[in-house]
Amino acid sequence: MTVAAPPLTRIPNYINGQWQDSTANEWQDVINPATGETLASVPLSDAAEVSKAIDAAAAAYPAWRRTPPEDRIQPLFKLKQLLEDHLDELARIITQENGKTFAEAKAELRRAIENVEVACGIPMMMQGYNLEDVARGIDETMIRQPLGVVAAVTAFNFPGMIPFWFLPYAIACGNTFIVKPSERVPLTMRRTFELLERTGLPAGVVNLVNGGKAAVDTILDHPKVRAVSFVGSTPVAKYIYARAGANGKRAQCQGGAKNHVIVLPDADMKMATQIINDSAFGCAGQRCLAVSVAVTVGEAQRTFRDSITEAAASLRVGNGLDKDVQMGPVITSQSRARIESLIDRGTREGAKLLLDGRSAKVPGGENGNFVKPTVLDGVSAESDLADTEIFGPVLSLVHANNLDDALGFLERSAYGNQASLFTSSGAAARRFRYEAPAGNIGINIGVAAPMAYFPFSGWKDSFFGVQHGQGRDAVEFYTEKKVVVERWAADHSRKF
Ligand code: NAD
Image (cartoon, rainbow, N blue to C red; front, side, top):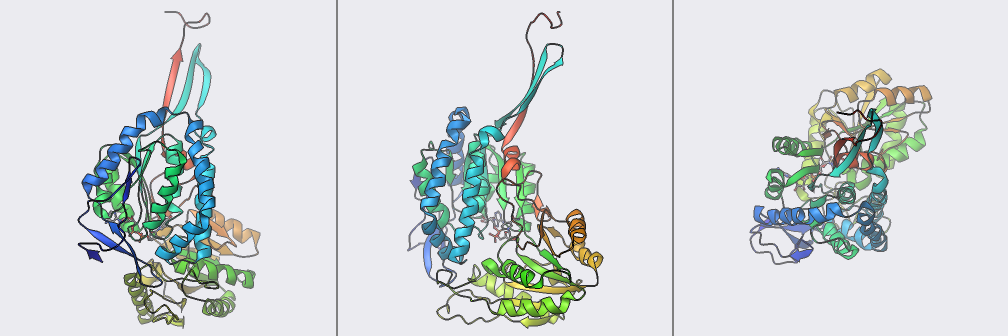
């Protein structure tokens, strides 16, 4: 909802080491998805405000770039400790604004911290290479230099983790940084920046601007921004990749997903059920690595269908801050309406509802956006729904006669974020790893989330770019290579 005069806590921007009240004309309510309570008001900052942040980052860059890498990582060591010390507090904020459970919020913060830890290795990771005597008396060296001002635009579903796929690497490599979090979950970054403020980072090295499309477009068009990282839906990822590219910027854009899991008859069905249940319904299905289609092969059809329906039905749904709750609400009432209409469409297209989570009744959650776990059986491979990202707690079941046919489902998908296989056969696992057309592969794993020292991969419409987030890819993305070829007069060198 957009309101002209916000009555609530107005979230400021953090620009040039200062908290600054936004002068935005448009503000948006931040709503707790479990209760409907309005938590704060977020500015949709305009081009002038975002440009101020970019100018501050550009002004901070020359001195930051000249700061030795060893000194640049010292604030990250402090940040790690501050994040550890404030883990519960931050997790509570995540649950309040995003809806996921407190345990899920703590888990995402662990992944954020891992990225800080890995970026502390930048003095090693950023090194180039060299070779003496590429010709007689001539030496050649490759050095990596930072780019300058870089920015990240992030999604609502991991308010604490996703900005950390970028921030620690960007600044450790010597860049200065701007983050534009999702306007639906701005409170986590607001608190995180209060912690960043205590790390001793010089003013302008990290900046926080809140906003929507206008803020993003300013980042995309501003000549001082050298690189943009994006995480969100595929249409916006494509748009950002194209516009950043047209403006000569580097871009890495992570998009949406429709992740398949193949269950072979030789899988440990009990383990597969538990793990797939968590993957499909954890975070209310709002994970870009959530399994949303289970392809059963042969005999697995009946056994898995029965066991997953029973497991999904047993999940306790409610406010993520309540102990014992295993699944929270979806992010907005619009999102709930969209998910429910996609379930309707599935049934109209011939799928059978084994478990119906629509019109969910949750005690105390009358104003929340609850959809309970839903299982749709027999979704036709030809239907629209088969490859539409639902981004909610809905698992579709399809059946294949053999592994060839099952892999065909994955081939037909426009997305390629994750694919998983449950089996006890090494040969099947090896074939799957080799052939599955996705960037993150799970073998008897439900959410194949790469650790911080591996790239967060993604193929097809799930990723646009070359270098991914995290680890060595992040260092490649945030640095420019320079090659120096050098001759100094020496006895053995050629004389002119
Ligand atoms: P979204 O695309 O609606 O928004 C993401 C960001 O883009 C937000 O900061 C938003 O303000 C901005 N934005 C939205 N519309 C824009 C526009 N027209 N122009 C410029 N900027 C715009 O995505 P979301 O709903 O926040 O997140 C859910 C999506 O993110 C899902 O599709 C999910 O699969 C995807 N996701 C992908 C990954 C991955 O690693 N591939 C990770 C997390 C989420």
